[in-house]
Image 1 (cartoon, one colour):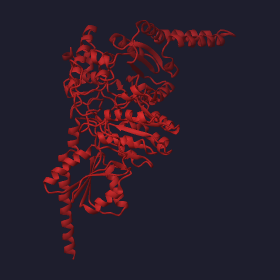
Image 2: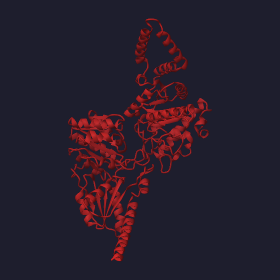
Image 3: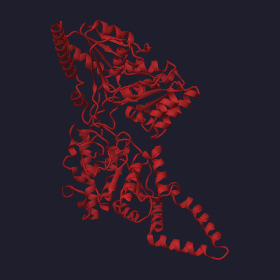
Image 4: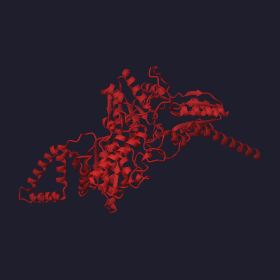
Length: 637
């Protein structure tokens, strides 16, 4: 069947049995591909029938489908002309794991973060109406994304404007109860049927015209109707926000979804279709462990197990175990996450200290302010959020935590290049958006062992703290039995001493810079290597000393060069009146694509060979510039 389907229009002539077979083949392709590339497996297996029904009922790309987050767009990509490229999923120069406008006209909006789809859909619908067009606009949002406040802001305005658009709620937390679903679907079809609505309007007008008692009878009838709806219609929240509600509907029944979509298209104003789906459907390990298979590295299809066992722990694991360990001796500690307990490593903490753990949903802004108030109340909250997601709570970090000098610890996972998830998930701006905030201590560990000491240190200083660390495994095993060390705030660590070049590196780049120094030393370029540790406060004493004893300073960071660690070094040298050639190595002023981290780092010049090459080139150019300058002085003399 999959050989017969290349674009959405190919679906329209297929029978129900053929569609079921197609759904099965799509699942097989997704499982086979993700087992090799890694990716979001469970979410995509749960929306296969929904995607088929959407593309049968609509005329994409004229009609617009907006996928919230976009991590469930694999079936959509397969059905919109990218089937043959699907094996390149998440690979460098291959298909992205999220919707990308540059890939296809069927991808309407680049997404990667949650809760934005209804806002996007409303904007497109208003633009359509203003220009007199007639396309259908659909937002597909999961129950998880619906926990985000932005979704409710958009629902509120959509209901107020009464704009024609369809919101599909992909609810994969509830089981399908056929009796409730059948009754609710029946009520929805009756309430939304055009003939019914016309008759209802006529009856209401006739009742209102009855002398003396008409208005009273109408108001009593409305009150009784609303009371009954509270019992029989599960979508009262959406009804109150101005939406017509349809559901719950079996999200794996293609015919039912398609029928209700066609019905929703006829309704004036916004409509919400509530679909019940099963995450991971079609692959037993994913059905039984949907959280584990939400986003997964390459795995063995037969066993469902990842193939990277017996390796050093991930930074995420080190953080989670260490925080749990510290919490045993510090009862003030409370852990907070925004719907990412496993992704941030807090699942272990949750098991040991359930009463001290909060998952606030996809609500990063609330998570930060909630943490601030807990700190105000005498506790020590640790907020574990991916670097790229903390961008959503920037105002709260400044206003509610740092301005008030509250002791909140931010654990920023996935700092730097995360790899295959691409630009929406790269955490490459945190140094730039955090280091200028007054009172915030900002640090980054060179390895997993140092992460343990940094986390311990963060609990001992009475100020806001942010620790940023990368995705992936540490360079070596971590000794969890080693006693904690209190690091001196703002003090860097000199790893190797040289004479000519001083390399100041941060985080994961420390190990890489040490390897680059080895390459340079073999070529007669003597290098000092410094583990900076702290971006703020910067070790100004060491930087000043190095500037006076070396010919060149090199800074290396896995962050945007604009406003990052290298900028901090330059700013200090300028304010101290120290003139010294400085080479800043980091990420250029662009959004980095997806691909394996080692490929992206190499393309950015942030592997050992790239750093060594850049240093050699800089030294050569600096020497030539000095020769030219001396020659000009000689001529002038």
